[in-house]
Image 1: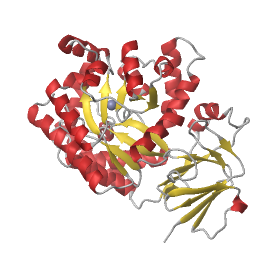
Image 2 (image 1 turned 120 degrees about the vertical axis):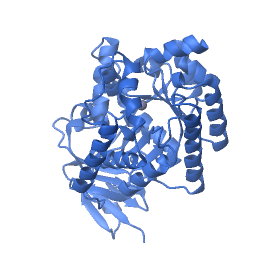
Image 3 (image 1 turned 90 degrees about the vertical axis):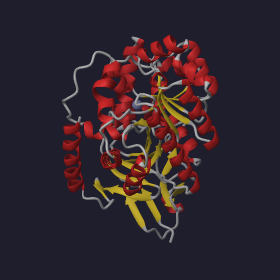
Image 4 (image 1 turned 45 degrees about the vertical axis):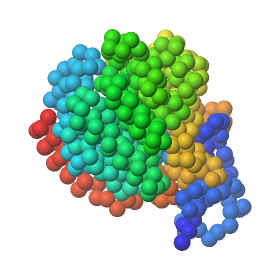
Length: 443
Ligand SMILES: [Zn+2]
């Protein structure tokens, strides 16, 4: 039976380009899609559910373009040695952690952080997974958590040569197996990319094998690119190329691919990214935390690169990430009034574009025919809210407001700030703490 949900009395913020503000419009959800946006009286009943959004904004579920679910169980871990530089951050923390992850840890990490994503109104996440001693089946375990929670995720395994040839091969095979499964048995909650760690931990041989598999499978790639200056230095020293030029040479960049970070790229790199149509995922909080520099989003966008927004596991709150991104860009450019549109568009326009591309139907905007991924946010606008002011409201006001209701694929996942998923959060967190204690003992 068709489920019909009507959302009425709210103020709609459409996202997309332009991002519009619609008053006096109700929104009808039918069969997991937004079926109508029209005045309430123009939408005939009956309805299975009517949501009254008085005093609330109706917005699309938010999209996170670069995420690592697997880092959830690191919260509070104080055992990593202090690090001088990004390479040591990887060696002292992340590469020690991911080597200890079990499949149970992987699935728990995903489920915990996805419940948090529902609370923050983020319904589509593009994840990049690593667990080098628990690779085979890891993406299926994450997929099970994604389906239980009810959000959408695009998954991949980050192939690397850092743990030897056998583990690199297992990573290649895990990407291929998951992508084949997605193609054979399509699920509206799941998509696949082909994951690669970063050019500095990948040999030309492995890059070639990945490129061949990706071509056969028809998937794009998801790879860290020039996150730190050390990535650039290593690739120049060993291959005489920047990471962008090297990956491009292997056919790994293009419209279907995501290059995360691009903090240290040359003007020529930017032109390659723009010409190829590669999607760059900017992760400002992570870049600040790791002290690797800040991507020059203003110049990237001006040179025609598609730049969206990820969180690199720092948060699942996309509006928080956007805010910090604007402050970071001001500091990067030494200019307190620059790059407002360039930053706002990462989340409002480019991320929905990426999600729509990955899923193959409109996603991340409020429009008739788009996926019914919708959130209701408590917000009484204290100043005029319209198409001219909405981006300022998003960054300075709505980012601090509470998400009340989260709907994904037409299913209500949270209502009145209470999860409707049927999971016992306290029990899940207790089990998670048990796994975390064991993981930290092994660390
Ligand atoms: Zn990352």
